[in-house]
Structures are given as C-alpha cells and as structure tokens.
Length: 119
Image 1 (cartoon, rainbow, N blue to C red):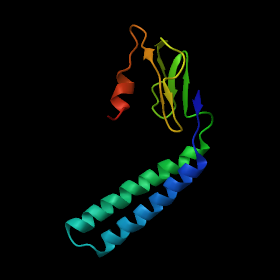
Image 2 (cartoon, rainbow, N blue to C red; image 1 turned 120 degrees about the vertical axis):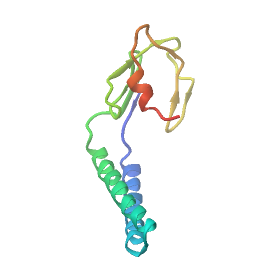
Image 3 (cartoon, one colour; image 1 turned 180 degrees about the horizontal axis):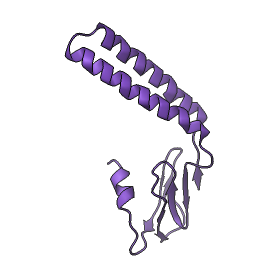
C-alpha cells in the first residue's frame, strides 16, 4: 500500500500558509510590545512552514509505503521500520489513514520512529 503527496491538499496548505504569514505580518506591523514580538515570531515560523510545504510536491516516489516488510515513511528519515505481520489485511482503511495489526520483529529499534510520533 502506497500513499503519495496530494497536490491539491498541498496547494491548499500553501494558500493557508500565505494567509497566516499575511495575518502575522499585519499583527507585527500594527502591534505594540509583546504582540509585535509574537507577530514577528509567527512570520518567521509560518514562513519556514511555507517553504517546507513548497518542497512536498517535488518529492519523488510515494511518501509512505506499508507492506509485508514494514513501514517506510520518507518524511521521518529513519528508514524502514520492520515488522512481522500477524494479519496481512488492513483492519481499517480510510481515505487518509489505515490501521494494521502487526507485531514488531525482536530487536527492532523503533526509538527514532517513536520519538517522531505525536500522540
């Protein structure tokens, strides 16, 4: 199972990023003191996010690959996370996510993966 970057969704996020940069710039230019400082911080933050979003459509190949060998997420940069599949069929597959029943191989180091997952 492969998941690729959605170009329309990426363009929507880029548009939202432009709006957030504009709103932050407005608050930075018109704010005073703490509000102005927060506004400039938000301009920098959303500007960096916007740059990261622009690189998404140019990535080659699938973003996430889930197969019998494990999970490979190109965005995490930790390589393939191996597993031993108990049930090859997905338990739940929706448009934006899938849930699988899997058991990790003994000795598999998943620390880099777990540290990048937000709960």
